[in-house]
Image (cartoon, rainbow, N blue to C red; front, side, top):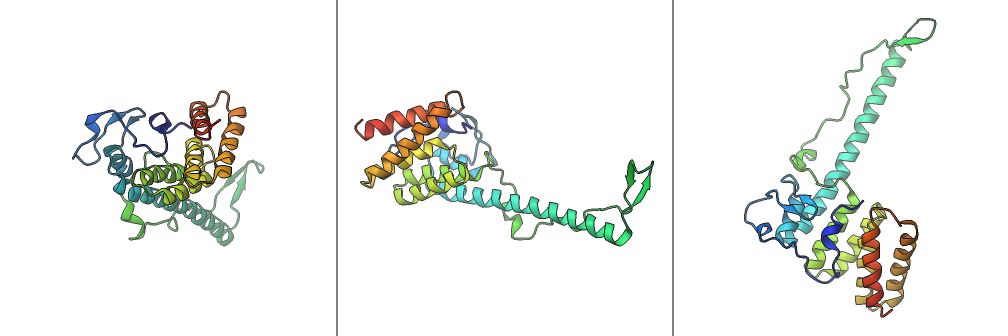
Length: 226
């Protein structure tokens, strides 16, 4: 799961550079080609991050997380409501007409989905938002990167930790947590994150995250003086 990692293997406290002047633009959420491909117009968080508007990006990545969580809940509710409707129809009308010696069952009721999920005014406030990566962990990870650029290191640490709760393969988040622990003067905690990356390295010899893991280990080891 590489996501945006090819773009951001840098030291945790240094500004991120996209290397393209065209990304600094007054046009809202324009599609821009960068190291990972195209920034979607429908994702204001990625657009703000690409333009270097990290204050806006921090807010928008939080909204992305809320959007994904809400969408997941809506899908679960719709499925549950549909299942409940089908069950209620069977209870009210019987199990259906059995034909073909019990090989085929003809449903006795037509479930039209009338009880399925319907958007409420609150749920429609995210209309038009399409996160480029449909992963809650990634949204917290990108929020952490935005917070680093704003000098909000404690908040960034919390964001990276939450990102890993949702997606433990965000290896760059582990590296950055190690650097942040060093910044806090907690060498033991930094070494623990290095050990975590080294464990990942053992089973990730050919996985997509190999480059991120190796880079994180190299930089964190050097920072620890190894």
